[in-house]
Length: 121
Length: 111
Image (tube, rainbow over all chains, first blue to last red; front, side, top):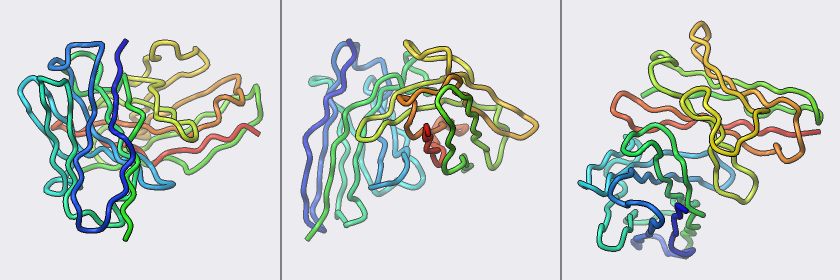
């Protein structure tokens, strides 16, 4: 069974940094793209970026380019999303999601439970 | 980049059929597959439709997807509405570089 296990909720102060994780299991980690999706409180889904753990090929949404960093560690089957210089507007749930159809960026076939990030002074 | 615009909300009675759209702002809706995701309150999204009209595993055949090039839009139809269908629904596609784009989301209320 494919599972995406995300790190726990975080409470941060403005200006701090955050590195959240998404560990994949039940499949060959290096063969599937993993994306990060933001959902601000009461708002819709926003596609942030994606990584192919096999070769660390990364694509960012123009809206998030330069604002976030996505990485992966093959040894632990874990993908990371780093946010720097946090602002209150970074308060959101961050989901990781796996693209299905092995290596093709078309549709998500599995989602993590989400990591709630709260940024407040 | 293009945008995908959905109606903010739709409502219908149990047992009825509801259809709502996802309109692409630029470029052809047919040029990249459209997916649909369901998100119930407090839960992660789940896949309903992929590649325009393919039902994801375990999704009942009450759900169907289509695209219409004349209106440059995709549509999700839910027939035989059940209270469990009450959720937010998001369409999703991608650009020529395969960067994803989500629609604005539609809240489905089963009266």
